Image (tube, rainbow, N blue to C red; front, top):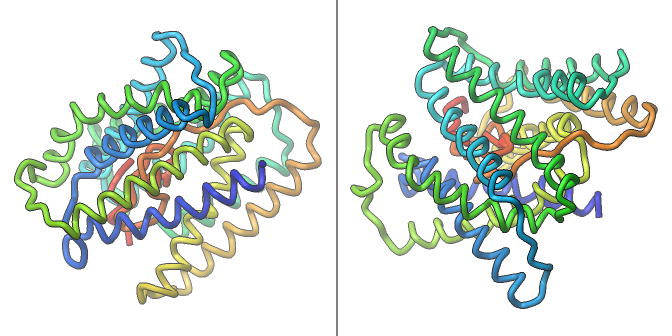
Amino acid sequence: MDVFAWFLNVSTSVLIVFVNKLLMDPKMGYKFVFATTLCAFHFLVCGGSVRAMELIGIGKRASMPLYDCLLFAVVASVSIASLNLSLLVNSVGFYQISKLLIIPFVCLVEYIWFKRRFTPYTVLSILVVVAGVAIVTVTDVSMNVLGLVIAALSVVTSGLQQIMCGAIQRKLGLTSNQLLSNTAPVQGLMLLVVGPMVDKAVTGEWIGGYETSVPALTCLFWSCAVAVAVNISQFMCLGRFSAVTFQVLGHTKTVLVLICGWLYLGDVITNRKLTGMVTAVVGMAMYGYFNSLAPAAKPAGGGGGVGAGADGGKASVGGAGGDVSVAVHSAGSVDKST
């Protein structure tokens, strides 16, 4: 189940980047540039799908305390909104650096709060992964006070979202689907309220002025459908693995998005991108090896579901996880870096 959950999450997270690229690209797609509102649609459809599965007997319904549900939904929603705003007020380079800081932040929280210990070799492998992804994604770097505050908020909320997912599942004895069925509708409604305003600030366009068409609505349907698989698999993974492990291995999505873009979309793999990809893969292999040698310990947390997408996609949307800037972080933003 661990292997299946990870494979499903990686494959769907990569797929949704390209579905969202078709939906959101202002030149070659359907110009639906409203990333935060799209995340709201994803969570609402996901919540409805999981509830429907429970009604027909696939999974057991379980409630959770209102406080825990609202806290998780608020943190996850702020994560997505702050990532979008960070991309608006910061350069792409600083935006990418702030996303990479999620890993050190999660490590710090797990070290202080959960008393998790990392061997020097494990820390080294994490640094190698971060360096590889930085080589691929970071370009110009400039910042201002407002951008620094928003970027810091996005790092803290994204990291906390990932840790809270696994912690809440263990605390309340919930399965990944039970947590998702409780939190996804609440998070979707929150994002639906703030999404149009955030999207207006980021794109300068109101969603009410969007010209719909049958092909665009069909693409939106498939985006939401794939997002259901992304969120379910993400919650499955993040109840099984620690937040640090998920962050490190999650960068496989970045590498796969770049490779798929090169194979199918005509993107150019420069020497810099190739060097960064190889470095990141070597770091992930090192992390897997050295982490397997460390004393067994319970995962300290997992990541929240993504709205859509994975890191590195031109039109990726995250939640969280991350990518996705994928997921869109993972990780909640329209990534302009590629």
